[in-house]
Amino acid sequence: MASAGSIAVSRDGRGSLDDSPGLVLLVDDEPLLLRSLRRILEAEGYETVLADSPEAAEAALADPRLSVVLLDLFLGASSGLDLLDHVKRVRPDVEVIMMTGHASIESAVGCIRRGAFDYLAKPFDDLYRVKTTVGKALERQRLVRRNHQLEEELRERSTSSELIGNALAMRSLDRTIHSLRHNESHVLIQGESGTGKELVARAIQASSPRAAGVFVPVDCGALPESIIESELFGHERGAFTGAVGSPGLFRVADKGTLFLDEIGEIPSSVQAKLLRALQHKEIRPVGSSTTVPIDIRVISATHRNLEAMVAEGGFRADLFYRLNVVRIEIPPLRERREDIPLLVYHFLRKHGRENSPAMGIEDAALEALEAANWPGNVRELENTIESALALAPGPRLRCADLNLGRPGLRPTLTAAPTGLPLSLEAYEREVLQRALSESGGDAAEAARQLGIGRSTLYRKLGQHGIGTGGKGGGP
Image (cartoon, rainbow, N blue to C red; front, side):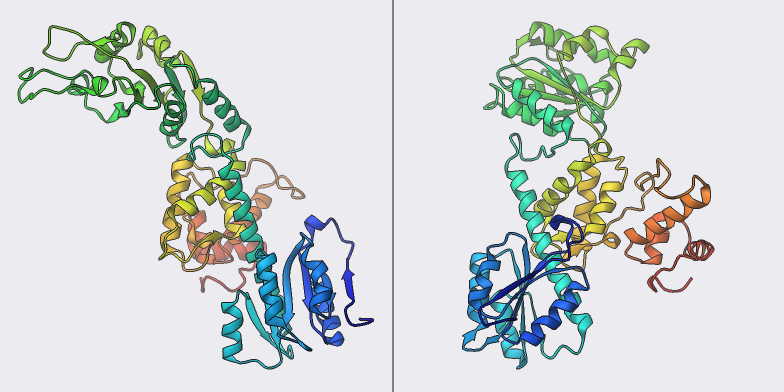
C-alpha cells in the first residue's frame, strides 16, 4: 500500500462480476497482512478491496457488490468497533469478520453482539479457517439477499398471498382472475391434485362482487352418495329416519360462492338436480313439496377429464356446459419449476417456528427441490418443507433433511447429459453422482433416495470409480 488513506482494487478479469464469488473489503493498518490476505482470497477467486483506515474503506462501502468485510479490531488511533457499527448501520446486508492479535473471549462476544459474523485471531496459522470463514460469511450474505429478493417478489403479488408464482401460466392465471372481478359467471377449474384449485377459487371470490359473501367449500368426493343430495339441498324434519332438518349447503352459500371440489365425483342421480338448481336458481329440499330460491355463484373443480367423461356417458353434457362457462387450467408444479424458489421461501416463512433453527435453505437442496417431479404438486412441496423444518438440525435445510426419495418424486433424466455418451453406463454414472450431490455425500442417504441397498450403492460406485467423500459409513 503506497500511503495511509489509500485504497486499492484487485480484479482477476475471469468473467463477469455476477459470476465472481464476491467482493471482499480488507481493512487493516498493516500493509504486509493486507497483501497476504489478498493473495489468499484471490487464489479462491474473490475480488478484493484493500483499505488501511476507516476513511479509505468508506468508498468501498457504497459498492453494491460488497459482500464481506474483514476488519481489524484496532486501526491505529481508530477503533474497529466504531467501523463495525458504521458498516452494520449503512450496509446491514454486508457480513463483517473481525480480526485481532489480542484475542479474548470478552472481545469476541462483544463483536458478535454488535453484529459481527465471526472472529479471527492473528497471526493466521490456519489459512483454511480464514478461507472457510469468508466462504461461510458470503454464503450467509447471499442467503439473506436472496430471502429479501423473494420476500419482495411475494409482496408484489397482485392476487391472494397464497397464489404464488411468476411462471407464464401463473401470470396468465392472474390476468384471468383479474378479468373476472366484475363477472359472476360459473367457473370450472381443472388441475391435478395439490395444484391449489381451492386457492384459485377463493381468489376469484375475493376479487368478485360477492367478496363480502360467504365462501362454502364442498368436497364432493368425500360425501357418500346416500347423503349428498341432503347435504347440498337440505332436508325437512322427518324426511327420513333421524332427519332433524337442515338448510343444505346451497342455502348456506346464499349471496356468496359455493365451491364444488371434485365435481366429477357427483353421482348421476344428483347431477340432474344440480343442473336444475343452476338453471332455475332454486332448490327443493329432501322431503319438501316447495322450492326455495337461491342466489349463489358456483365454482367447480376437478382433476378428471370431464369432456372424456361426457363422451363416455359418466357425466351429463348439459351440466358440463352449465358449469364450464369460464374454464381455468392450473399447471402442475413440474411445468413451472421456476416458481419453486418462491414457493419454498413462502413455506419457510409460513411454517418456520421459534423452536426450529432452520431459517433458509442450501443451494444444493433448493436445486434438488427444483429437479424433483412433484406428483403431489404444491401441496406435496409444502408438506416436504414443513417436515424438513421440524427435523432440521441446522440453520439451513440440507438435501439430507428433505425426504426426496419417495417413489415418483425422484427426478428422471430425459436427455443424455452434456458430454456423456448415449449409453446405460453413462446414465447410471450420472444418476449416482446426482444422488451423492443431493445427499451431501452421505452414502446412506443417497442409497435411500435411489431405493437401493447401501452395499449395492458401494458396489456401483466402485464400478464407476466414484468416491463418497468418506460419509455414510461402511458398506
